[in-house]
Image 1: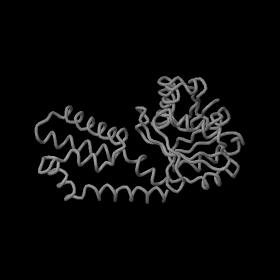
Image 2: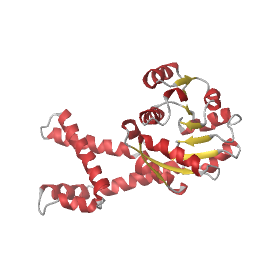
Image 3: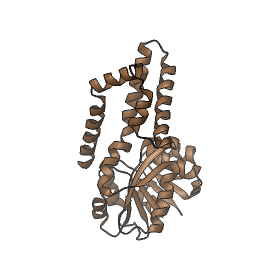
Image 4: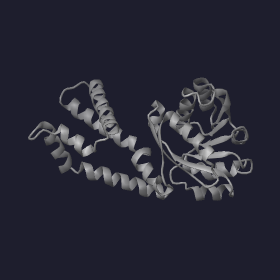
Length: 264
């Protein structure tokens, strides 16, 4: 099996690293294209994969093709490659807002398509990816794709009508968490903690809290209540967060993200 990547930015790099780390495919069976020689040189040196400036070469030399360019470049790239995409080839999209029907229309029909929404924690092997497929993708094909997507984190199959929600809850959400970590660190620095330590305390607390949700299976509200002693410091902090609209701000930001994704 050979995998090709059209575009080789952060997300493609993360996926390739996961594939190689989990020994799903050897680096010599992976080929990637990019617009600039600097990117290709970096990718080849860092990952040991084959590189090219020619999207057609990547398409012709892959069994699974990952479209890893930004959404606005999809029409241009698909127009370039659609005539050489083979019936048995699997095409994976990682672009928000591009539906299976839209992709199929761009390719001209009959293409095996998997739509995905990964996120940047894939770079450290802790990604979260939503996936769905069209009717041309066999169970065997899809199992292979899920194994690839699982090489850099967790993957869940979801109905396509939830893919834009996936953008807001996982695709974009690392940015929300970085703001939270930065704000927590700023608060600690304001009260005298050195910044490097503040980032470590904040980031580790977020990491540990996430693991508590995933590993205990308890409702986040229950876990929150376990930290909040009556009349205590945590309850006072939670009171201020609610007063300042923390919860509603997150919800409204996510709804705005979904609206934007649906408009792409």
